[in-house]
Length: 478
Figure 1 (tube, rainbow, N blue to C red):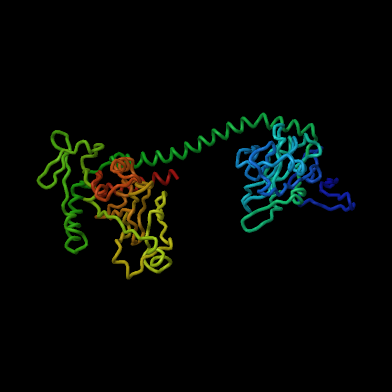
Figure 2 (figure 1 turned 60 degrees about the horizontal axis):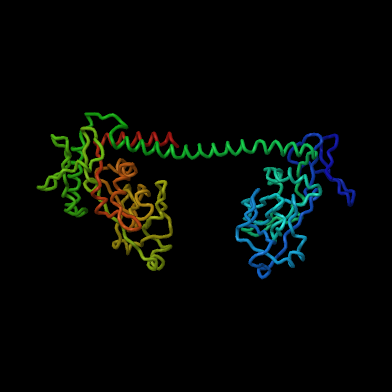
């Protein structure tokens, strides 16, 4: 029995011994006059479940045994792996039969995660249920109290009080009947309990409606942010994000710089001579787009998705970046030669996430003696997944040289245009062109097809302003 005194302190009197003890530190808040602090064990019998054995269960009967998976907050999942017992065993274990207005609780879950102590109030049609071990019954001496208690048990202060008694192993948490009996509950007069329950039932539809609206708003905010990012990228690659400045030159001049860089790389043996075979895309007097490839001139008007500013050009990805796939490693070799060793990081598809980040220290590395057998993706180049469900959706910029897997594609841009290309590869236009080239059951795009995808190219100084504006706007959206 809990007794407040005139000095507003709380005391508990143990009726069996007459001992009185101050419990101020255990009382979480003040309650209205006429209410009382009580322990659950003083207002209810707490019954732990029976340890039915698997051989006790039969295919069907009118006596279902409720296990942990059947009890949720205010919901009985009676169809979740149902098990039944015979009439004879039901009679023998009648103590564990559910009664009308009992509150069922779950007493085992994951330690420190509070993913149990679910509570469900037994209704009229639930009377042929029996409780298995680790399911408990709270049977109140005054049955009407259960109507208030089914809400009080879910209150945050109650849950904090309950879980202070949690015991168990490193992973499994348990609540025993003896400890549940110690839990303090603020108890109003019965008539006030009924009025509180009535008001809660009146407010619940409003709360649920608000929750649904809030969830819809959260979803809208998330999708809106994504849509805004896509819109920014699309405007950027169409020349609509920043103004064009004539003094910044033309993209045609940038292509010439790229050609000179490629010539130098070929001379140094760092690039194949075939990389010099570029095409030229231009707009004719008839407003059609043509591609000059050697002596051939092809009409590619239908391949051009939109118009660009006059100082921009359309070109192929392969003309402005070195593009190639990585190397695969069998699981046997990965475990025997490349796991937990010192060497250059090896990046697989799983190591590139959907937030443009790369996990470098993944336990797989290529020792120096094996490096010649692997393609290298240099620092500041771009890795993109080109096969499987994440094809075209996983992409990131490297901050160091790495070896990489065969389902990843490396884009190593020329003349420092990597950041603009990185954002282009995330734009709706690129994603559409990429998906049009997918083949196979699992969905992938070959390196040859990736190289042929078109890209709208601005002058390099405009690229720098575009990148700066994209990053400024993205920061504002975070």
